[in-house]
Image 1: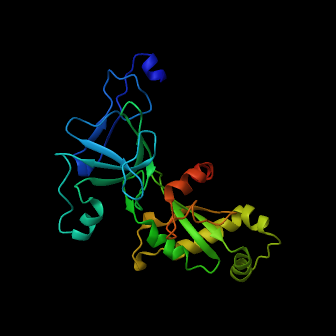
Image 2: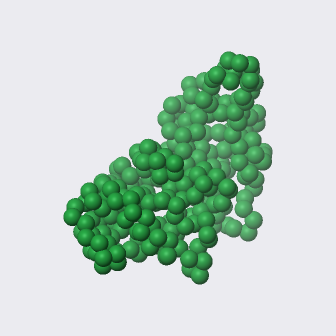
Image 3: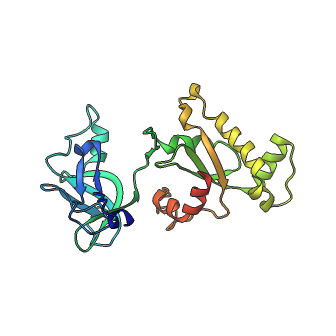
Length: 250
């Protein structure tokens, strides 16, 4: 790290409100960069796979934590608490990570559905994705925007139905799928149609409207972007389309 080279020490740490907030931290005497350090004293942190089994160092999974600083649960919300805690008392952070062979924590993404914007708003993407799915040409859609200034949507379109929608709604005729995918003005028109569905009268907040959309050329498949139960593997989608997502938010 160039900051370290000029005598400025950076001590990374990891925490969250539910853990008051410390979970792990890298001290000033550590020379291991790109990690968040080991768990703080008295705190147990483990990485588990989708079945809840603890995995070895270097394997990505969900970060779970147990310790005296972890809160006892959400007030008057038994269902949320059942989902938030394991049977043996570990709190499911919703973060993805892995341990190095030296026991230092590295975060790699998010596993929970909730998207947290850079401004701090928490957003349930499934509600907005459901609204997007009302449009006849949408085969699937995934919302992105974690730690960003707003939201964008990656849409898997049925191209024939999209052509029909464009012709009927905007009186435009596109000759090919490439025309539809590359037409920036058309994407802006479609985005506005989506945002018409995200109105306060229907329970949506102003910050839940989309800043950008893009069309994907490949459908989501089981074992890659989808689980066996057809749930979206959001961290996989975000990793696969990282460059596209970065371009949307430039």
